[in-house]
Image (cartoon, rainbow, N blue to C red; front, side):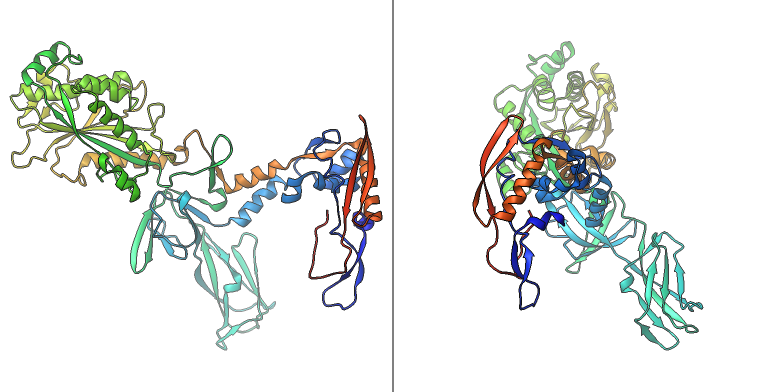
Length: 609
């Protein structure tokens, strides 16, 4: 290259040669441009267009392609990352470097689905091998497993056998194919294999005419794993399975998440997850007083018969809405990894506990205004409907001659995002509120109260006297949608006798509804405060960041080039006073040239400029 002709020469031994050769010292470095690269008097900014080459930009700016070397000395990022690629080449690069499949799952990957394990999709039937894991992103990187398919044939007059796939498969890994001469029962090694561009046809050449051959090929199915399917593996002779939420090409998988400042942020890979908070409340009011006051003003804060105290609060863990942890166990369970400190369970559970602790006469109206509206963010009109219905249930039991339940339990079911924030009233994510209540008498809600507010059921069944855990169950949906008033919101009335909740139809229904919502909206369930960045987008972003570069002003480029070459040719590690003239006047500075003075050998090395 003509650029290096002015570099000083050194004695350089190539390879195993015993004598040295005079050669340009391309490791020589001149700090001429370093001393002015931050002085706006000498440079201006230029935005590289897609496909621009350094010599083209030099020719456009200076009328000569010979000054392209200045771009690298003036821009450290350009020197570090290289000249930006075309946008199409960036896409190709991402696909080449990340050619596999990425699964995203909310399952716990700490001790299962390890690198090297073989997996199979239970719906798709596709098999693969785990290459890498990214537990912090909830990702598994998988290579689909090729299968063997055998073809037989006799070479044509050109000593070739042509084979073709007729199904949705492609040929891969031709170096692993086995070609056997079945006439002589010998494996052939001097053949060649040519696969078509679409990988559906192959030609095996250099075979002996008149002989029969068997070709064991490697075939990859075009079918892929399926979103939401269960994948199975066997590790330590134990079958294990998890559900995969999303299947994408690896280059389109999430590489990281960024905050509004552009910095990386951590996520909770188990999210989005369903969180249940359950509150056991004891009703301590007076039935006859409540009945009279309820009819006149059901949501009055002065109802002397309407009094509640809290017994306990339970929260679920990250993986199951059925698991109960008391609020008092939070510290212990957090240490064990069952709960994440700062999660919304602590927020809503702690808020209600504080309200009860500070109010010796907590009423339905308090609960509606302070908790449903104040904490959960439920629309005020809808919270009124829920409160009326709860009051109607309690009053109806009393009016039927039964003893009002000594306690009832209600549950909030909400979705938590991967920043551990609650999806609240501002979102369209469904929320659910459930009630369990007990009665020792059959009660007609519709007949006993004008405030039943279009309940989905008319009657309450009495508890079994032999099973104190038996309860009636009702669930409200779409709690968090601001402005949404669902007049017939109780849609499940289910008598359950299972104290462990595992078989409670209402819980199962809510969980299935949430899982269906997550499956349909998985890509959009990301907090507005963070931005997901894929492997391809990361490449594109880094590539775009070096498109705006500094370039020397046209009026000084010739002087810099002349001074640079002169310093190279005249200096051996000495300082030279140089003056560069610019439009605003003359600038004088000292420039240093560093060169190698000793004989070099092939064991060393340096970088050009």
